[in-house]
Image (cartoon, helix red, strand yellow):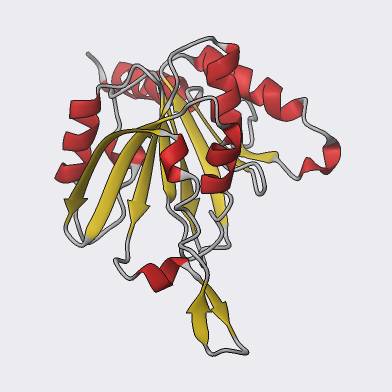
Length: 212
């Protein structure tokens, strides 16, 4: 194959890959669009990976300035039991749980509601047919000193996955969605377009935009 054909083929592959991915801001909607997509597709309930980076319960409780101490329950304890626990394990200093969503949308929403906080636990979502054993293996193969990143470790693992990319701090992040089928990316794009204008959800990198 000539160099010209190799370059052209490489460009085609990059184009195909780009059409399988979209990035967007979803403050206030974190984790919800992939869940709704799965339900619209009538597919298996998606898997939720949660990551717990601190074993101290106080890290997940509220600080009271007047009392000078942490008070109240660990914020996620009300919601975790409402999802189906599939596996729980440690990787380095981090504890991971893999759960399957149930009909409890409030629990799902609440677990994602602290995405912009340092004590967030919801990490990433994988389509329901994802092989649980292989997902765990990919997490354990990642660098334990770094956060597990679906972008780096979920290739060919499942039909689609969703995660958050951080920059500048916990309160600065954007969502990404990758699918084997570009039609699912288009479906998510349509769901974003159908949200109210004041939702704040908007696409930041779109493979159909020639400027991207």
